[in-house]
Length: 176
Image (cartoon, rainbow, N blue to C red):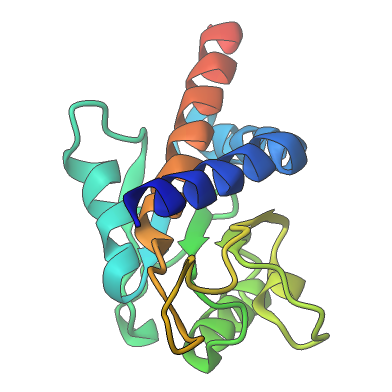
């Protein structure tokens, strides 16, 4: 089972590297605008994806200018024009996350969304200034009964988070 899981996970990482490299670079440039202008990058993740915020705030290499985005809109800060939100979503059709993205979009906040792509017109990615496809739409491992399990959304999101972080670091070094 571990070999199948590893193979599947490597396939996802390779797809992200091949297909999302430009979106990752665009996202990092977008985030650099907030850092360079001394504004904030708010990070959002629901349930297991709150782990991204912990990585951004408490890792040995914290993300620059990062703050948590509260889940409840009444707790949101007064956004400045150059503030950005980096939003991680395990599903492109979660209604709460879609409403959060829509409200941020209405407020004119720059929004980078990392989620699986969806063909629906009402998906969350329609509110993003930059969308990065998570490339994870179903569990990776088959059960004997035909069902599937093993949905590593945090692991794949962390891969994208680090890709954004490394690219942002390169951009900021070029700027200085």
